[in-house]
Image (cartoon, rainbow, N blue to C red; front, top):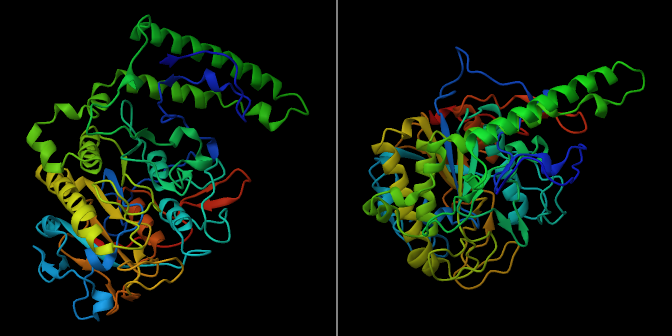
Length: 492
């Protein structure tokens, strides 16, 4: 359903919610920001290595947090209660090994790098919620409970990495800035932890497509009602623009009188015009809509990714990148703290039965789909301009069956934010390398430590956004895009 005008429903800025042009469930993906957020950072000569090399980003978020020792950083010389049941296997990158549960990714290792020295000390207990917020936003979770449990998202949240990328590297007419597929970020009963635009406003929330991609996706979002033609829609937008211009002139006259409030002066009408233009351009764009038509792919390609929710979400990400989407987040289907269960969509939160769950269920799906994504991007000449990052919110405890903060059952690994790993590829990153090193038990970084905020700074750096950029929040306080940290230029 598409609406231009409708019943009054007031927003906090006094403008009508139903006056927004909505294209079905289309989020406010094209809304411009207030002037305090209008500065764009441009690449300039003399930037450090890798700056601006990527045009797009795919963030593969493995919510629930897989074990870094069992996937990316095997420890064959450690005691049995640490090294676990899996053996390391060689990869196509000389000197780099991975766990035996990733045989297909091992054959793509000359297309990606592994960071083995990620780590941090989250505020509160090392629970999923606070760690997710840190990874998604690059900021400390000051609005969380002392135990690190998640709270519902709000417009006072700091913006996610996808929202910031979509704002500071606008995708252009007829293209998406930020799309989230696969599943929402979930922790306990809270949906959307750290995934939205927060105080940047609904303009930069992700366009979400969480339908099961193994089935035809519903595209009513991009449809016009039967009695509305595209020309008629354009006429309505033009009419709304003229009304806005008159109201803006009226507001300007009122602002000349003493005592006029700042809220009266700042009508925000230009913001709504920008939203109309973005929504209209998406309706007109065949490329943006076609990206969601997975049935257009040859059956062999779909099978290559795997007919699972995660596999087809990775394929959808590739198609969105081809449609010149700026930022795509692919989120693992199960929420962060679900009990691990058999099947392709279960959780990575392996407090028990870590090894059979990884060997028989999680890793076969992950290995097949992510290796297909990396190889497909490389084959199509898209990897060099697309930064791909695959990471969970933390790692798993080195010692098997030992609880650090939570109840851990037989054969399980607990939460472990002190040290973990990430895959990073494309966007100018030098492939075939293992960056940084963990200690002999995989418990703490041994060399070249990387904070999650360094990782986010690296993403911004790669797409040509200066992580030191500042803006002002709703309380007029200066904020950096990332709390602290620097780009890991040694990756490029």
